[in-house]
Amino acid sequence: MKFPKYAAAAALLVPAFATTAAAQTATQTVSYEVQAINQLSVSGSPSLVISSAPAGSAPTSATASGSYAVTTNQTGKKITAELDNDLPSGVTLSVTLAAPTGAISVDGVSLSTTPASVVTGIGTVNESGLSVSYELAATVAAGVVPASSRTVLFTITDGV
Image 1 (cartoon, rainbow, N blue to C red):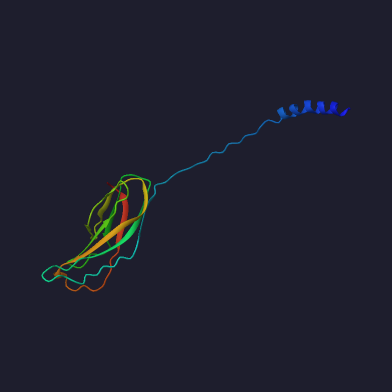
Image 2 (cartoon, rainbow, N blue to C red):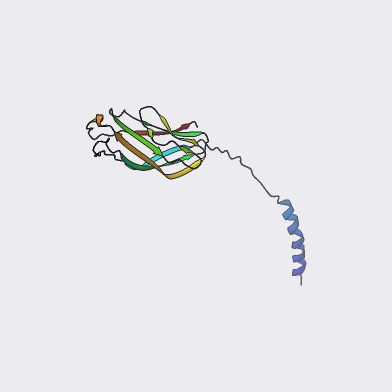
């Protein structure tokens, strides 16, 4: 029965070794940053054709739609819209964007080569599937306008 004697001696030595093996820690500094995010995208291929007018009235305007998405982690933003080139005389293209949560839409903005506010008061938001509605109008003085296209430039920028 010498075994229990050795076991007892070993049991006395284990705590001695455990206290001499101190726990080790390490630290690391982690750098982080969240930069300004202001993203805007549009989808769809709107096509507008004016092809009729009731007798004695102006030509019937044409409408088309698309959609857009917006993400910003800043407040005090707005969306502007402008054309890459002017339209022919007597032809007007207007746009309306549905406002994301908390923002304000400006209804039926006539587009030109000068940026115009179409949505204002945008705060921190990430939304998609928001509607873009176009309306093409023409006076009889516009005459026959051959098929053409214009690029609409949407910009998210500072401003309310």
